[in-house]
Amino acid sequence: MYVVTLPASAARNASAYSVAAMKAGADILEVRGDITPGLRPFASSIPRMLSPRNGDLERLETAGAAYLDLDLNEAGFTVGASKLVISFHDYFSCPSREELLETAARARDRGAEIVKIAVTPREPSELLMLHHLQEELQWTGPCAILAMGPLAKANRLLSPFRNALTYTTVRKEDAAAPGQLAIGEHRQLEGVSPPDLYGIFGGLDLQTASPEIHDRLFKLQKRRARYAAFPGSDLKANFRALAEMGLRGCSITAPYKNAILPLLGEQDDDVVRCQAANTAVLQDDGSWKGYQTDTAGFLRGYPELRGLKKVTVVGSGGVVPAILLAGEKLGWAETRVCARNGEALDSLRRTFKIEGASLDTLGDSAVDAIIWTLPLDRGELKLPKPSSDEAIAVDLRYGQDTLFMRLADGAGFMAKDGTAMLMEQALAQNELFSKRKTTAADRSVLAELAEEMGAADGE
Image 1 (cartoon, rainbow, N blue to C red):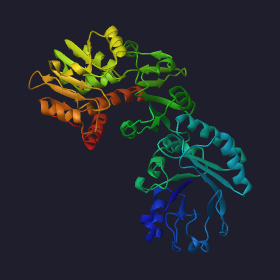
Image 2 (cartoon, rainbow, N blue to C red; image 1 turned 60 degrees about the vertical axis):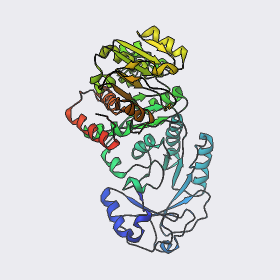
Image 3 (cartoon, rainbow, N blue to C red; image 1 turned 45 degrees about the horizontal axis):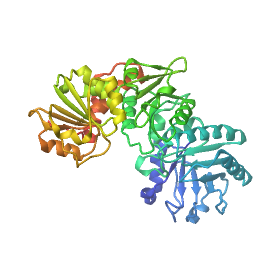
Image 4 (cartoon, rainbow, N blue to C red; image 1 turned 60 degrees about the horizontal axis):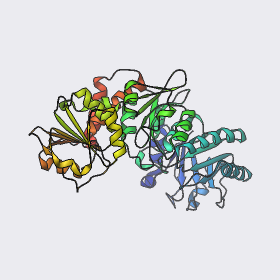
C-alpha cells in the first residue's frame, strides 16, 4: 500500500490534498505531528495514519484513524480502531542486522501489527543486509524495511514488491524523508515483478547525472527499469551485493574503472586495450561482461577533433586511456599527456604512442586541442597557446563554470565542456542495457536534458 504524508504546504486544505493523493494512487494519508502540528479535524478521501512524532495531533485523536504510527520509544496514545505501526528511524547510519532484529522484536512486543524500520545505509552492501532483513522479518508479520539518504533509490524501487507499506510523495519536493520517490514513479513501474535495476558505482564523493540520463531513456522506451547511484568505498562487496539484489547492468566511474576488471567474466577489445571498463552488463549465463563506452562517447561527442596534428591531454586517471584510444581512431598525429603521476605516464607510454611530460611543461607549445581530465582546476598552470582560431579546449567535467574553461576561452580556444561525451557514452551504454540501437527520439530527449544542464560550448 502507498502511504503519502500530508506536507506542511497543504495543511490549510488537507481535505483537498487527500483527494489529490487518492487520484495519484495513494492508499493512506499520513498526518505527522512534527510536520503539521495542531491540525484541525478534516474529511479525508482515503484512510488516515496518525504519526505523532512527539508533535501535537490531539485535535485529530478523537476523529480516529485507520493506522497509528508510533516511534519505538514514543509514549503512545490511543486512537479508536487503529492498526498499530511501530517505527524505528536512524537518519545517520545503518545499525547491524543483529541490532535491527532486536529492534523489530521490541516493536512486536509493543503490539506492532506492522514493523517499520527506516535507516541510512552508508555503503551499497548495507542495502543487501536490509534486503535480507526484510525477508527474515516478513515471517514474523507485516513489515516495511526502508533505506533513506543517497543510497535509498534501489531499496525504494523494490519496496512495493516487498513491503507492507511504501512511503512516497505526490510531489518530489514534498518528500517527508530523504530518498522517497514520487508515487507517479512507483505507478509507472507496477507489475508482477520488480523493475530491472541499473546503476553507477563510484567513490564516496560520487556526483553524477547518470541516473537522470538513463531514467529519461528508460521512460521514453517504456522500459520497467530504473537507474540509481551507488557511492561507496568497497567496490567488490558493493558490486556483489547489488548483483544479488538483481542488478542487470552498471556504469563504473572513478576510482573503480580498473578495480572492476577482476570482477568481470569477459572484456571487450577496448577494455583489454585500455585496461579499464566503464560499463558492465549481466550476461545470460550469469557472468558479467565489461565494456568501454567512454571511447565511443568521446568519438561521437567531438567529431570536430578528427585529424588534428597536436593534442595535449591533461591528467592520467581512469578515463585517459579511453581518450587516447579515441585519439588513435580520430587520427591525432601527436599526442602529449601532461600529468604528475610518473608511473601512470609510463604505463600509458607502453600502451599508446604518446609523449609523456610533467604538468609544469603544459604551456610549452601550441596545440590544436587540449583535453582537461582532472577533477579540479589548477589555476597556477600555464595553458598552451592555441595553434589557430579553430583550436579547441574540452573540459570533461560538465554542468560547471570551471576556471579551466574560462582561462581556455580567454587564451583563444573554443571551450567546450564534457556534456557531449557524457550523453554519447550514455547512449552507447543504453544500447548495451536495452539491446537496441539509439534512435532520434533518444537523442532528442538527451538534447533537452543537456540544455537543462546548461552545457557549455564556446561555438
